[in-house]
Length: 177
Image (cartoon, rainbow, N blue to C red; front, side, top):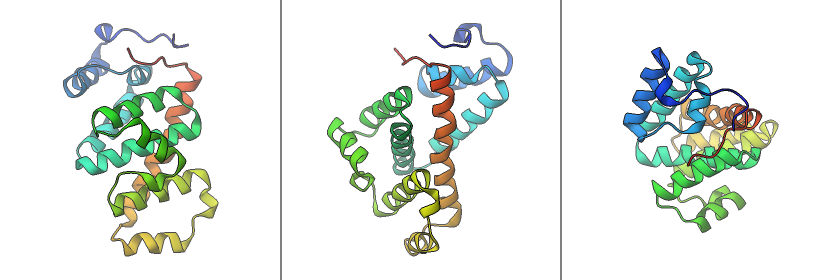
């Protein structure tokens, strides 16, 4: 049970109801993690906008962002996000449990193309030891055709998981049924 009172989806009103209706249209239901955001409609709106931005990308990029959420959540010990993103990787992207274990051990094992694998490795380096990122790392990514915007966006997404994980762990978000 969440430590905060989260009204059922059916009781949502106003902007929260509009966003929940959109989430249901896209996903079929509102995950418990997104329900928590309804405590702050402004934050829910921003979180959903970020998710929609990722969903508008090509499938390979969506997979990359899901792997990043999975690995960042593993790094932070957020069981809710590990479970949600792990099930997405299995159910939407066809990964196996063995592949999930392999990418936990080494992100370089991720079933991604060269560019997205490089972005994944860079993002994980950034969240594990930001001080170790160097100009050489940036140049190597540029040589692969990766823009500075792509670098920024991927580190933003990875580091945003610290915020999400902290919220979910603090307020005890329950696994979805």
